[in-house]
Length: 273
Image (cartoon, rainbow, N blue to C red; front, side):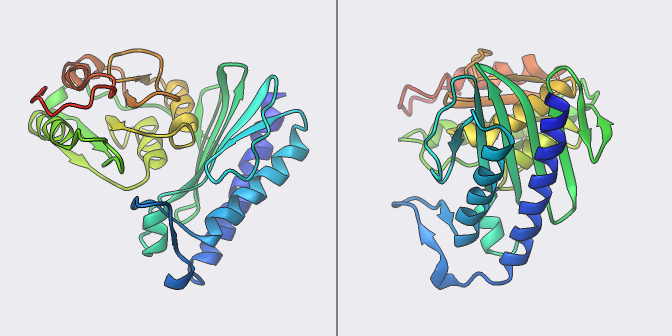
């Protein structure tokens, strides 16, 4: 069953991705809305892309529910739930930066079983089914073999809402940067994770992600041979506050730094790092 669902999910992801590329040139500043006081902007295309995903996936798996960024459907399934980010990298998208994607995962009970991240600009589709490995455009992929932390390239993101922990997080950033080859910030957590899965990055970490940002990427990385955890090496990374993923070889090195930041629940600026 999963093979059929994965093929269908790849197909709809590519269709929605092409829609997003077409719509990108039509977006005007007057059509951009702001979510509250944050910097997280959302466009008409973002909302329409989610509607397309929900309508298709409801037909594909009628008993399923949805955990979706734009709240198109609040239906919850007893066994299956789709976790949808119709447009990850919204700010890049709105400003014409070619780094954005769709990201969809399928949760069966409490286990991720499918994940697809599609980059329509470069026509790259990262996908995985539980126990079947990970692919990029049907080609098997794996995480990097880099075992030297000092030679590792790490990606991260800057949280929109860090609740008074900016100083701690910037100290963590400085520590990672000083101990590795460098840090990259693409502006799309899903693509950062896809790049870990195929070996372009050796690790990625971020605070304050939502389930739709990281669910698909977590499965793809695991199926590509990598490690995924929260900052304390626990399993609460999809619905928790912190996420760390890497090739497995440098996981302990990354944890030495992220564990000092903790699980993200203590809002202090105490110089933890």
